[in-house]
Length: 161
Image (cartoon, rainbow, N blue to C red; front, side, top):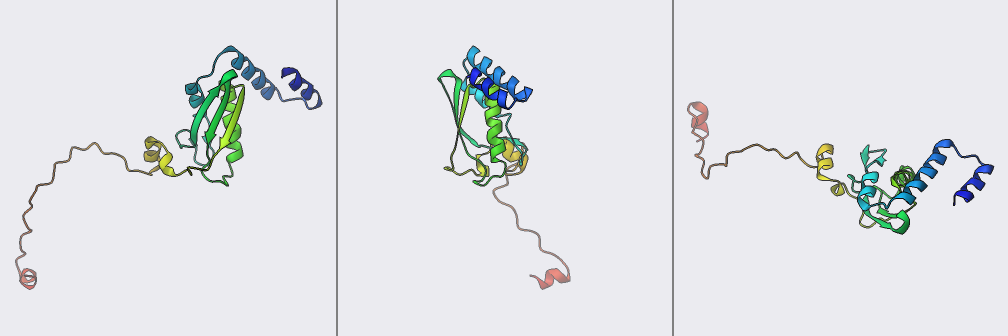
């Protein structure tokens, strides 16, 4: 694969950063087995550019599977089918998983179940105001019976008996 990449690079020289990433990812893939936890950790680095939150906490990742030779299969969705940032998010998923040691990344976009804000983590929902903060106040229970309010005295009290 490296030879094929180098043959292509003669026609269009790669930028040094992508070449470095290519060799770094290949070396990581050959030296260790990638775990699912490492993949989830890598995916937390992928930020949705519109919401400025990571795609794991947003609930966009439905599943991660690592198959032999550190090939990773990601099942995910986007906030909407016409998400303008979709290509950028998918590119980041591929980039961060390869940096973690994946030799190949297969991303499957699914639309069922559709994404809703309720798929976010509870902490993120609280931060974004989707659900109320839980208050840790020690509230006294309401009494079982409360007396009726006292009648008003004076002219208004006489009118509203």
